[in-house]
Image (cartoon, one colour):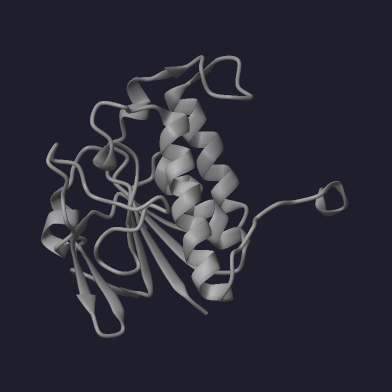
Length: 188
C-alpha cells in the first residue's frame, strides 16, 4: 500500500489526507497546529455560513480521522529527503524519528523551507513552482496552499489544492485518472 505523508494540518493538508485515506492509502499527517486558521473566521467557505477557524479545524480533523488518517499532532517535520524509494521524512520529536513515504504533500502555509531543502523549483515571485495537480519539480512531492500562491490565501483555495494533490496521487496509484465522486447509493 502506498504511504502518503502530509506535512501541515490546515485546510490543504487535511483535505489531501482525507482524500488519500478515504481511498485506501496509508496516510500520516504531521501537524504543529500553527496554522493561520486559529486567527480566522470563515464566512466565505462554500457550504458553511459562519464558523470560527479553530472550530473548523476541529471538524476537519475529526472528518479526516474518521477515514483512518494517522495524525501526529505537535510532531514537527524538520527535513524531507528524496530517495530512490520515495522519501524519508524526519521529525524533531525526542527520538528524532524517520518515516518513509511514497508521496509527500507539503502544506506548511507560506513557510517554504522544506520545499527548498527538498530541491523544489521556485517561481520568480518566490512561490513553489507546481503543475495543475500541485506536483513540484520533484516527482511525487506536492506543494499546496500559501506556499504556491502569492497573496491568494484562502481556506477554500487551500483545501482545493490539497484535493488536487491527492487526486493526482490516487491517479498515479490507479494507473489512470481517478475520480473521487460519490453517488447517493454510496452515502450513509
